[in-house]
Amino acid sequence: MLRLFIGAAAASVSLVVAYLVRRRYQLRLAWWAQYQQLLLALERQISLAHTPMPQVFADFCREGKGPLCTVLPSYPEFPAAVNGLSSEEWSLMRDTLISLGRTDFAGQAKLLSTARLTADSRHATASAEAKGKGSLISKLTVLLGMALFLILL
Image (cartoon, rainbow, N blue to C red):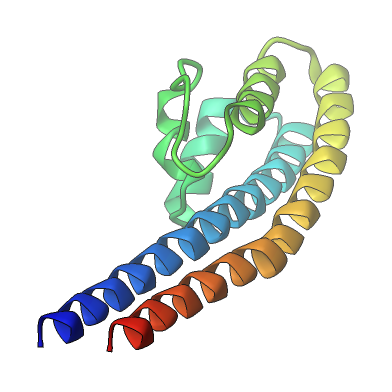
């Protein structure tokens, strides 16, 4: 009876770990998707309406919720690290957003086009990793939990 309980606990823990692994990859994908949307909004608002960046950030976060909207209100003093992104990825996003406020409109347009290309590439990579690694690791974790359950049965 004790072995059955321990096996069920191991299987349950493996399900939780699988969920957390998959969620990590999905959160990273959500960051990049929302960053792409923000860059499009910035491009429209800055080039066409000459809207100040804090106002663009406020309008963007009013329309939708997501991981990026948790840090945009603190512009230009962004946190050093965020949940869901590596430090290199976050510093890339943060530095781009801070740099946008320090250049003229022509420089901002050039920086936005470069940032969009980078964001598109990173989003595609994050999507592929979410489908590949995230799915594989979560399935292997569930299988490991089931194997432990069967061994202890």
